[in-house]
Each structure stands twice: as structure tokens, then as C-alpha cells.
Amino acid sequence: MSEKSQFASKIGLIAATVGSAVGLGNVWRFPAEAQSNGGAAFLLLYIICVFVLGIPVMLAEFSLGRASRSDAIGAFKVLSPGKPWWCVGALAVLASFLILCYYMVVAGWTLEYLVESIGTGLYSHLDEAGGSSLHGIFAAKMQEYVATDAKPLLFTYAMIAINIVVLLGGVSKGIERLSNILMPVLFVILVLLCGVCLSLPGASAGVSYFLEPDFSKITPGVIVNALGQAFFSLSLGMGILITYASYYPSHTPLTRTSVIVSLLSLLVAVLMGLIIFPAVTAFGLDKEPLQGATLVFVTLPEVFANLPWPRLWSSLFFLLLFVAALTSTVSIAEVSVAMLQDRLRFSRRKAVLCVMLPLFVLSALCSLSFGSMSDFKLLGMTIFDLLDTFTTDILLPVVSIGVCVYVGWFAKNKLLSEQLSNAGTLKARHTAVTMNIIRYAAPALIALVLIYNYL
Ligand code: PFF
Image 1 (cartoon, rainbow, N blue to C red):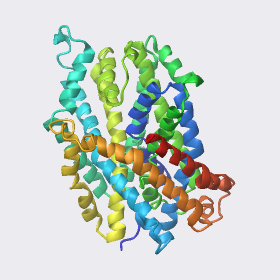
Image 2: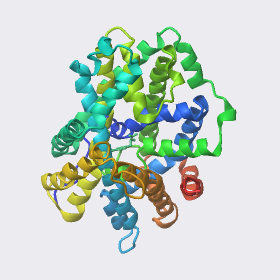
Image 3: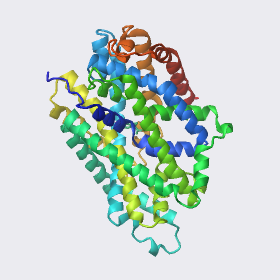
Image 4: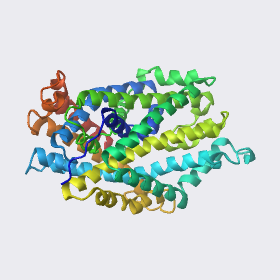
């Protein structure tokens, strides 16, 4: 077998892990969830979930990956040979691949909106609209860009092709190099857009909605959503962190890495809130319900159309979304690629092609779920919705519980302490607390979420 790949630098491994964590979950799902779940109250719960539960579970995944230096399935096989724990890893690989199928489609939309913003597409014919509102125009454009067959499919394919090129480059020359370039770009754009939106007249009402908590808004449902959001946005339960940690050098401090990654992921979510809430209140668009896709593909173009240089802001915003989506799709594809390389001894090239080529069919089915296959339903859902629901509501919590139960109760006693202290070379005073969360609090609460979703 070829030598195990590693990230080449400290900054690079953080950039790659942050690149995975910062995805559409932070830039789009978070503001929409926050808007419908009480703004600041949701933000507060989300922060608590990230620090109290998210970081310990992240450390459990990191420990599995780095101790075994293997893929998500191999990690359990190496650490507990002959035991059925590898099934948890197999579920993680399954979850990650199914997520990849539909996430690639949404990633394709971000590329499509970027191209349509740079060209004149998205902002053409606005003055000829006559009586119809800007909202109506952008809703019609979204229909065209998302809910027809050919265009969105083309951009999904383009996104798959870009992923193939990056993945063929390998861990340090492909994924790490891409993240090193794109992550700083993402932060610069975020700060710039934040400055623009915060300086709009009337922005302060949006800021107060987002930052002043109203505790009466906290209900069990809001808590469940905050926990789900924290886990999704930290990329937990997908095998990604096991896989990436298997590329971490043995001197990487895992706790510090997990805190930096979580803080940066949180920062992106908060900055997104500071872009979206002021922008929508400034233009009185907060009266409309801000739902996931409509928020970024209809409401925000409406905001940009009201600003000077709409195409500039729109291009920057969709570049941000595209970067977030690309670094996340690459990380989730890597779970299956690493699995094929480690389990079946495939060459990198063969592994990448075996994972990515089927997407030309599977992601196409997800893309057509919005077009000519929108009436094709299984269990009452389109293929896209079915994959989304099955993975986020069932597979991700099940994998996270499996990881916690394994690391907390069944793995070698010292697994966590050895990994957090880098075999005794670092002080890791928080190990006992982390272990207790992994053993009791995290699996119990995730199980409650799982049950709550089905009550
Ligand atoms: N943390 C990622 C996000 O917030 O979007 C989770 C993720 C989803 C990673 C899908 C990768 C992916 F393909």
C-alpha cells in the first residue's frame, strides 16, 4: 500500500477542516433556522450545543481517525479487530455518499448563480418587469435556474467535474492547496459583505433581532433544531472528521484544532446572520417567510437589486456560497475515496473515479427532482427530499450515537486520553469532562433528538 497521505502544514489542515465544516449549513441553513426559531435565542442555543456537545463528539471522531490512521470503516477495524463496530463506519460512509448525491446539486446551483451574476442573466430585464414585483421576478428566475431540467443539470455536472480535478490532486496537493487559497477568500468576502449590509439605513433592527435573545422563544423544538444544526454544521456523523484526522500528523493538538474549527465555523454563521438580517429588514423583506433556498436565491437577489452595483455584490455573495459548497463536497467525497483506497487498495485515481462517476447518474436524479421528476415520489417525497431526510434525520444521529458509544464504552480505555494528550506530551486536563460527555450526555441527547423527530 502507498504511504498514508498527510496534510503538509498546520494552517493547511485547519483550512481543510474548516473548509469542510463551513458549508451551506452555516451560510444558508443557519440564518433560515435562526429566523424561524427566534433569532438570538436560537443563536445562543446553537453556541451552547457547539461547545458542550459538538466539540467532544468532534474529538471522539478525531481520535478514531488519528489513532487508526485509517478510513471511516478501517478506523473501527484497526482499533477493534474482529468486532462488528466497523458497521458504524459503514453507515458513516453510506451517509456521506448519499449526502454527496444531493449536496452536489445544491452546490451546482451556487455555481449557476455565480455565473448568472457575473454575466447579466440574473439581473437582466428588471426594468421591463412592468407590474410584477422584484420578488416575483427572482422567484421566476429561481424556477428557471433550479426547476428546469437542462441548466441545473449542466451546473451539477460542472461541479462534479471540479470535484474530480481537486480530488485527483490528492490530500495535500489537491484538498489542502484548494482550502489554503479559498478559505481566506471566503473570510474576506464575508467581512466585506457584512460591512455593506451593516451600513444600510435601517440595518439596526435586523441586528437587534439577531443579537437580542427573547428566551420565551425557546421550546423543545427549537432546542432540537439547534442541536441538529450544530451537528450538521460541524460535519459530525459523516465520517469526514475521522477521515481528515487520519491525515493529521501525530503532533497536531486535537483539542486546540477542534476549538479553532468550531469557532471559525461559528464565526461564519454569525457573520452570515449579520449580512442577512440587516439586509432583509433594511428593505422590509422580513415580512416574507425566509425559507432555506428562497432566502438565498430570491430574497438576497432582491436585496442586491436594491443596492448600487447589484452584480458586484451578487457575484461576491455567490462566490462565497460556491467556495463554501466546494470545500464541503470535496471533504465528503474524500470519505468514500479514502475508504476505497484503504479497504480495497484502489489507486487514488481509480478510487476517485469509482466514487464520482456514479454521481453523473445519481445527482442527476436529485437534480431532476425539481424538474421533470418532481412528481416521482417514494414514501411521499422526491428523491432529493428522501435522501436529505433519511440522512439528516436518521443516519447522522445514528452514526454520532455509535461513535460516542464506541469511544465512550468499548474502545481501549486510553484511546481518548492518548489522543488528546498526544501520547502524554501535552497536558489535557479536560479529558475526563470530555469523556463524560461522550459517554452520557451526547448519546442521550442525540437519541432524544432522534425520537423527537419521529413523535
Ligand atoms: N458542515 C457542512 C455544512 O455545513 O454544509 C456539512 C456538510 C454537508 C459537509 C455536506 C459536506 C457536505 F458535502
